[in-house]
Length: 433
Image 1 (spheres, rainbow, N blue to C red):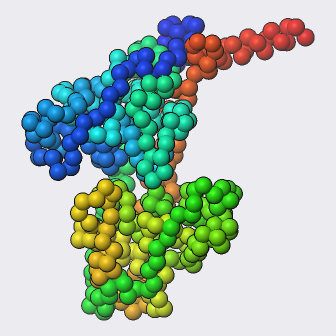
Image 2 (image 1 turned 90 degrees about the vertical axis):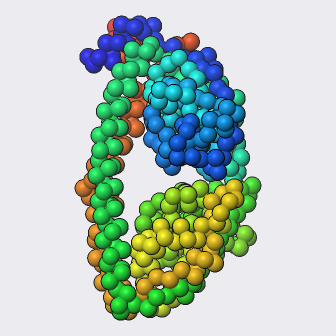
Image 3 (image 1 turned 120 degrees about the vertical axis):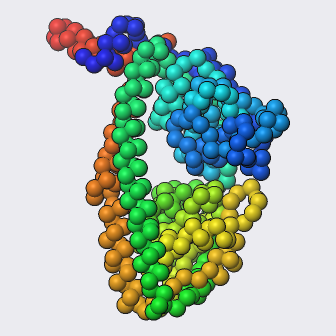
């Protein structure tokens, strides 16, 4: 019997209590400071966008600060509070949160919820990233382009609340998984950094035999759009890939999250682009830190935040995708628009950017070398990526198992109690027959 099962039997003989978040926490909204208020020192602060881009599940320090004068007008999270981002571009990310484990209050921006509670902060954060929570937040989320969960609605979220000793044991188990995954991810990140350096150096060496070519002259660039979400016939049982910014996370796209139907193509005038196209994201919050590029090996459609390239004769689309990835950070930095509610690129400046384009035979040789290197870094069937993928799936499986209890009446039975109850019913059934 595991230590967790022993604790459940000792402390929860009648099951684990099931409560609403409003019973164990008070929930308030964040303040109103903006990125322009950031300083390199002062009062620590967390901007809601940083929860998606800079932090993991827990932190005891911040990347940014605001002045004491600005902080006086803000909402503060206390040590052990949870800071949750309540707006996002998609349902998957909304309500991403972290536990503030610093030893002083931290200022929290708007579009955030501050959850002040009397439980184990890590236990709650693990729960807020579980499938059980996801199923509940989906019902609370609203919006189209911007997905929001109103902080006031979070009070009705239901969750198992075992004694603190049990929460701590669950946290200990899950911490072991996350720490191992973090170590493997750090090693893979180092390898990818090495690959990026090698790729850029290799491309720089081709400049002697290459023509510096404007991105506009690589082929035909096009944009896309979104068929009406209100027309179910455009989406239900769709088989045609539809690329949006949330898809562009890998160098080679394997599939899209959303698909549209032939009716959408015909009636909404969607363009289907050929296999072997290259897509870039020109409008998305991810442009704050990344220039997303992907090679698409299948026919596809795209939305309005994507620009897609069909290369002209004599130019390898795989070469172009490697080159845009290699120079991506410089492209992002020199073409990013200032201001605006959503980060975006000045596409005319992107088109004017120049990359080295050598003769086709040299392009193909470079592609062969870089594809092999990239496969080692990114292929989920090879080395570290496979190990990280396996560990992540294992962590998610055990996280949801550890946080799932069978509901019975006003309590939730522990896994051990549920098993014993099922065994007892089976024995009784055999005795009756």
